[in-house]
Image (cartoon, rainbow, N blue to C red):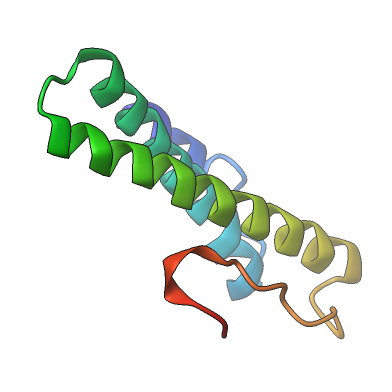
Length: 94
């Protein structure tokens, strides 16, 4: 948790709420993936292990989407950046 919190605040704040949100959410989601991996390593409950597996799959896709968007926003300065690509996952199309 401490590593995740440090990573969330490490980039500092740009003043652009979209950039700051994404920059903080990537490590937040990565923290969920890291915790889920620990459950797969040490956990024994099959239902919890299945949930951990699903978290890894879903959060990995979301991290990739957020990283792509963050790169575009930083490159474009946040203005006029292309439409956000669909994250996929279980929520369906946007």
